[in-house]
View 1 (tube, rainbow, N blue to C red):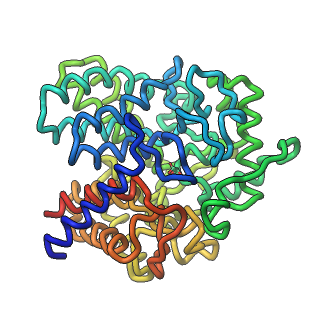
View 2 (view 1 turned 60 degrees about the vertical axis):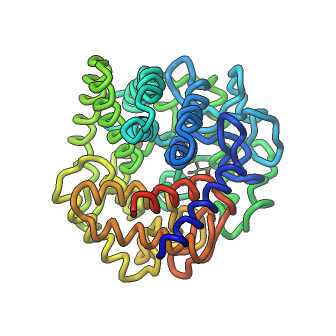
Length: 426
Ligand code: GLC
């Protein structure tokens, strides 16, 4: 791509970010997601930093201003009233000063803050803002291991599919058989007004999302109880890898800033997590798999959640095996990395996390591969991502076979990732 076109694409991406900017936080996209989402914001901050470093720090600070007293950082902050999204605050009823959801999302903040700090032109500002965020992110990490790893296994479980960020992945299908639907209050979905229902989760899945929500609400959102009380406890390798990477990055940053206690605690979390991750490896699939903690078995489902661990410091042979798996997949898909293996009969090219390509996931996979010397595969992923934007615009996700844009449009974190891909490519 010639540089003029690159500059133009970056300018268009910045336009999307500005459109969705609400002053001190950004929304993922108008209509479909009109509030602040946790991991969207952290990754979006990386894009914002390319043209406004102070604004990028604010994005993450706003999220952490709504951290719960127990340390959890909620997956949605409902800053304003807006009835275009369901389930809203009147369903969650979490009793927070500003309404939030009652579950969390992938802990990418530690990674994002370190990257903002490392790249900062204004080092004084960065040190000040990072220093204030350090104990908050550390508290979130501690919360994870205390509440989601109650037996100290080294890996945390998600208790609701929305926590994974991969809402309707095939990974959850078997465990969802255990989640009842009796007693789910009547509801009207809003997502299907903004996006094609064929690209979204099904009603059967929504019933179960809501059953879990009501179950946790009935327990008063008391995190000390929720894990053991949930019929859905999944150890997702991608989710854990993000937490492990963030813990390692937070440790490095804390060391630089002289916060040795925080550094030590996070280093220990990362090391323990990496050792425990071995239990999730599958030779047959050449990637990691989810563990269903309720029954103690690996889930036979080759999703991108098991490829994402290259984002953390897993053993070199594991990274090489995953790089080979991606190359095998690239032989079948026009665009990589699909959210599910195309050989699986359950693969669905258009339905959300059951097949489509997501640029945020591509970004983290490419980052890990490049850092460990697999530059060719990393570049292939970057190229696929940039091609998708050129052909299909800033969509929420894309069909890996046709490149068709899917879900919401003018999507914030997609735009942020494009800026990241293009700026680091030069
Ligand atoms: C969907 C995605 C999730 C994302 C949210 C807002 O729920 O699955 O990962 O954070 O939308 O973009």
